[in-house]
Structures are given as structure tokens and as C-alpha cells.
Amino acid sequence: MGWNSRWLVCLLAFAALGVSASTPDADLDTFIETELPRSAAPGLAYARIKDGAVTAKGFGETVGGSGERVTADTLFPIGSVTKSFTALAIVQLMEAGKLDLDDPVAQHLPAFADSPERKVTLRQLLNHTSGFSTVQGNSHHGDPEAPEVGLRNRAAEFARIEPVNPPGARWEYSNLNYQILGAVIEHVSGETYPDYVAAHIFAPLGMERSAVLVGAVPAGLATGHRPWFGGVRPFEQSERSAINAPAGGIVSSANDMARYLSMWINGEDDIISAKSKTMMLEPSAPASPGYGLGWSIDQVDGTTYHTGLVPGAETLAMFDLAVGKGVVVMVNANSGLGFADTWYLIGGAGARAMGEPHTDDGSRWGPKFIYLSVILAPLLFLLLAFISWRGRTNLQAKRNNIGGKFSLWFPFAAMAALAGFLLLILPQMFGGSLATLRLYQPDFAWGLIAAAILGPAWAVLRLVLAHTTRSPG
Image (cartoon, rainbow, N blue to C red; front, top):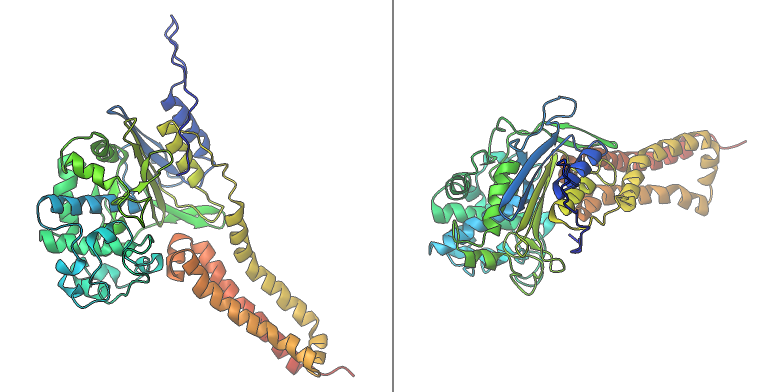
């Protein structure tokens, strides 16, 4: 998170007439009310826990321009914060004597008996040291067959994926780890992942509105909004698949998430033992000093946190055991590359709720440059095409000497290479495929596609003009 532990304390003074000074909650609310209209998010909900007391509020709209207000009971997708629930379920099964964290995955999923990752342990899946990559973990985004196949049925396909790195050698965040863990939960418990989480986590904690989103979208879910050329537009979610459920499929409200975070902060034996809670919130392996079991760990300021990102929504959940504070912030939009930003709002609200400084200046110049370079590239190629047509006589003259021929053919080779980079390599640098980018930032993805088409088209046009126009004189 990068926030240091310092805070300008709000002095509480009560005058005889009963007028009070500014409070931390008031400072938080003022920040949200100021920044929400400036951000890309139409709505926000938060819950703040301090010394066992909960403050939960909603701001803005469930759909931009609708007038339907967000409340503390509005449902939001929590994205990868779901991983903490999946890890919690695995630890519950461990405490019930049904598995051990150092069991190889093949011990609980027979499909892995002869697979390349048969020696990967449950602990390595939990702490992202299994060897699976981020790109491998995002491979099911945009998969049209994903909604039709359940976790246990997909285990055989998971078993054919070979880890990029040796198990335990390095940390790399991957949704695939938690997709496999979901299959383990189903095999060991005999229940589907949604049914297990509902019965063993939601019900005991009183999280009555929360659900694992598989199939139809429930009523009361805030509409997501995705980046679209500097702004956002609504994204109506289709049915969600069981495959991605253990990695990012839970929807919840601010009030329900307050109950969940309170369980982590209370230091008591409840749905798991206090000892197991402590174990899950500590560095879990030498290769994973900043990640426990389902939770990230900031070793500088002592906070435990996880972020969540799905198409159209973002979440931050964070707590500090030492001071008994926690916060969840949920918005119904996901950030773009520098524009259509939500993270300044989320991070600022989280910092204020935790009593920490907000050091983010919100500039995002690097991502903005990348975004503009891609979005403006198609216009550049159209301009170059016009210039080439105007200069077609000069192009025709180039075909008569070696240097000229090189200047005609080199752009074609360069544009073909650029197209491959834009469509295949650049999306992987963002942790997925072109299909993944189309889900999270469709404007940027369409910019890549347009540039990958128009760049080679311009180069081909130059060649056609050079070989079909008349020679001078």
C-alpha cells in the first residue's frame, strides 16, 4: 500500500453550545463527497471499523445518471478480496482434519496425479508460489465456454497446465491458484464452492446479503462501469462462471464486509481459531514475504490488505490488528490507464479511514502516456496514409534503387512486427490476453486492434502506390 503510519489528529472539542470539531469520519466523508464527482466512479460504499464500532455509508449512484442511491447495503463485486474467503475455507477444512496445508494438490484432486504440478502443495497455491503465472491465471477471462463448466469438471484441464516456475521458487500472483483451490474445496467438502461459502462463512457471520456470483446477476447489485475514452460507461454483467468464483466471484455490501473484517480483527476463536487467523496473516514462505494466506501484508506499516478488480468495479479491504481498525471501500467502476481513474478516490478513502497519510498525487503520467500513444496511433496511421497518397509519385521513384526499395519494404516489416507486439505481447505485459483487456478496458483494447490493422495497412498502401503509379517523365 505504501502508506506510512502518521496522521494529523482531529482534535475533539465540545463547546457549551454543543458544536463539535471535525472528526475522522467527517474528514473521510468530506473527501469522498469532494472526489467522487471528479473520479470515474458513479458510486461508492465504505465500512469503517474502529474498536469494534462500525460506520457504514453509501455515496453516489448505482448507475450513473439514474438517481438510484448507493447505500451501505448495496451489493458490489469484491473481486480478488474473494481469495481471502477461499483461503479461509481451506483453513476451516484443515482445522476439521480433512486436509493439511502442505498436502500436494494431487492428494485431493485425482486428476493431478500425473500432471506437471502434482507436487505443488496447497500452501503454495494459497501464497502464490506454485509457479503458475499471472497470464495463466487470467486465461479464462473472456472464455465463452467458462460459464458452462464447473470447478471439479475443469480440474482435469487445470492439471494439464505446466507451471512457468518451479514450485516454491518465486512469488507470482495467479488466479489459477485459487481456481484450483476452489476445486479442492468442492472435492474435500462434497459441497459446491458457493454452497460451502454460504453455509460455513456467510451464515455464521450474518452476511445475509452476500453471495458467490455464479449464474444470474442478483437484484440489488450496483451496475459496473468500464473506461471508455476518458470516461466510463455502464457494463451490464452477463452470467458469471463457476471457474472464476474462488478467485473473484463474491458480491457483498459494506455492512456485510464490516462483519467479515470484524471477524479478522477480533482475535477470537469463531469460524476459525485465533491461532489460525494469526498464521494466515503472517508471511507464509521465504519466497512470499509480502503475502500470507489469501491476504497481502505491508511490512512497513503493519497493515493487512487485499484489492479486488473485476470489469466495472474495484474494492480495497484493509485492517490493522495492532490498532483495531479496518476499512472496506467499494466503487462501481474500474480504473483506466491514467484516465477514468478510481484509485485516487479508493486509496484516499482507505488512508483516511485508517488514520494514515494519503501520499498519492493522482498524476498517473506514465499510464496516460501509454494510453494516448495507443489511442492516437490509428489517427497517425490514417494521416500517414493520406501523406503517402499525396506523395505517391515520390514513392514510385523509390522502386528503382536498392535504398529506395529498402525504404518501401522496411515499414511493412516494422508494422507487421508492431501488430504482433500490440496484439500478443503488450496484453501479456498487463497480465492477460487481448480478451482480458477487452473486458477491463475496451477502449484501450480497440485502440490496440485499430493500430494493429491500420499500421500494416498503411505500409501495404505505400507498396501499392509505389508499384501502380506511373514513373516520372
